[in-house]
Amino acid sequence: MPSLPAYPVDLRPCIPVRLDEQHEVFGLREVLIQAHRIEDLALPLPPAHSALLRMLTAITAELTGLDDPDLSLEEWHERRGDLLSSGRGLKAQDVHDYCDASTWDLYHPSRPFLQDPRLTEQCTKTSGINKLVFGRPAGNNLQWLSVHTDTAPWPLSSDEAFWHLLIQHFYGAAGRCTTRSAGPHTSGRATAGPLRSTLSFHPQGATLLETLLMHQFPYRGTPQHSADTCPWQESTPPDPVHAPPPVTWPKRLLTGRSRHAVLLIPNDDGSAATDCYLTWATQHPAYPATDPYLIIDTHTQAKAEDRDRPRRADADRALWRDLDALLLAGDESSAQRRPAVFDTLNDLPAPVRGRLRVRVCGFDQDGRTTNRIWYTALTPSIWNQAEEHDPVAARRIASCHQAAEHLGALLRSCANTAWNETSTPAAAGGAPPAPRRGRPTSRWARESLADYWPHAEQVFWDLVHQDPDEASDPYPAFARTAVAALRQTVRPDLARHRMAGPALARAVRALMAAAAPAATARKKAARRAQP
Image 1 (cartoon, rainbow, N blue to C red):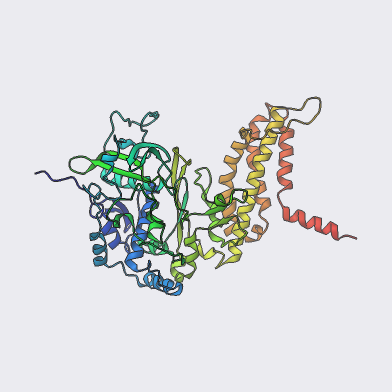
Image 2: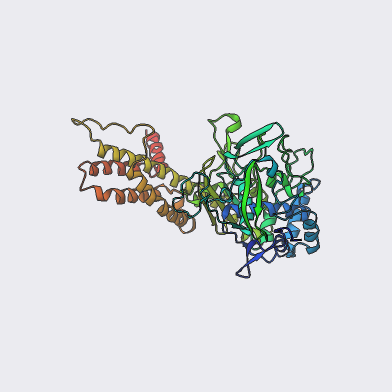
């Protein structure tokens, strides 16, 4: 009798890692056992990297006892500090016992890992393997530059199927999906995954185990009326009919908020997935929860329930522009709140804190179906410049960022106005019409900003690290950068448009006038003080 296809992710090599300056591929068990030697995960898909970090963090919390709600805050920090200082890895037997208690097989007949076997009966047709894979066109979408079509789908190797399975659970799309009938619910629409379109900030240490211990966060005292488990620790798949269990700390918060149900269909030997079902997991509203690795922006003009929103991933926005949001502790009046996990990093042992970097994983998506691009970056060691440790440096970084943003916004406005004055000159010596509200950004503004932000980044780091005296009033430096960018953009049009020169001159004056608000304030104060 032929054996059933199988792909246990705890045993099969499916997780790329960097070890001893080389790349290896391990199963989940080996990753946990070798975590104190592994330098970092090496998944090529940033959303999968971010999702797997959350999954490994939940597992590590249980293996180390850091998920014990009875620990006081002092005891919790002491236990984590001891684990970080010991240099020891996780006990191999504990890892084996943990993994033996759950099913990790992607193609298990009754309890496939992170999947729902009931979909074969509850869905009338499959979704196609292209629907699972981010980057492949599916259904009636145009191919453009892709070779994939639904008429001749290419199988997906099982290790990559595991990565995309994680991404679907965390970043899955809203809207049309394969119709599912479960109890009284028959629907072909899903809601967005809990991390869709977000930007995650992950503290990173010298080893993977150090990284996972930095990812831990203590119990906040919120009452938990149900057992806190990960999806793979449940005996049955999530219930699609009744409301999902409440979000509990830390496992359900990190791994148990998926809005999608998936079932992979393997080839004969389990080496690849050839088809899949992809549909909704629940029709009930999601419980409110704050992911500990997201920056939260407060929109004061929005309704109370919509004021706090995760910062969206934007591939056009340089990551250094979010640095001050990590380093500043903030207060009740602040419009941004750093990821909650960063509030637990101040009690780290000094050597660990000194080498702490931040891994940024972003997936630029809209709120429903469009996926633009994913990206990742790694900051230098920054935590010794946090407000709790070096408030002068943190405030200097914040003021430099504020100046860069102010001049960037002003550059956009001045470039739009200059373009409007050039392309729509005034009649009979009157003033040109003002730019209409909602009008698209002008060519001059787009090109100026594209030139401004890379140079502004260099100015930012120069001010922060090399010229702290000038950083006390950073507006002139960024104003000069904005003026140079605008002049570079307008130069080719000076000979073609009669009004370009005067319009450029007015824009330059406006930029330079706003260059030093502190100096202007001092001059006004001096004039008021004169008798």
